[in-house]
Image (cartoon, rainbow, N blue to C red):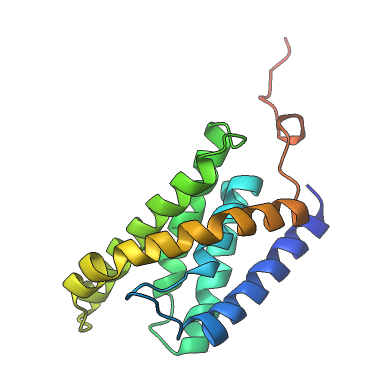
Length: 175
């Protein structure tokens, strides 16, 4: 891994976070919202691993929280945990499997909705679990699954996947 990979991932997530906040936050179809940042984070985490996933989730969430003037750290927390776990999934299973990005996006979308609802409830914010979990969750999952293929392909072109030979190997003690 080179420092250029980190800069590319940072630039990609920065641009996607700005697009998410400025263009896609007001787009709603059948009650669902496209979460381009979440789908891009899944692609980065699957291709680069858990460290990139967690760092990218924190960065993207912090940008979204700052730009929308929401509770600072709420989105960062959810995306950091999601990016880390999807990165671990990519490290421990075959990320070359065709279904890996789709399964990851669907699972993270559901967990993001549950996590955001739970955190808002714990903070005392007014949130309708019925609206979030029943009415808008399925259209949001479908929106994100439609975005998965092009985003994963473009992210794969920008950030090459980590090869097993590039990863640190187990250390053996001599003697």
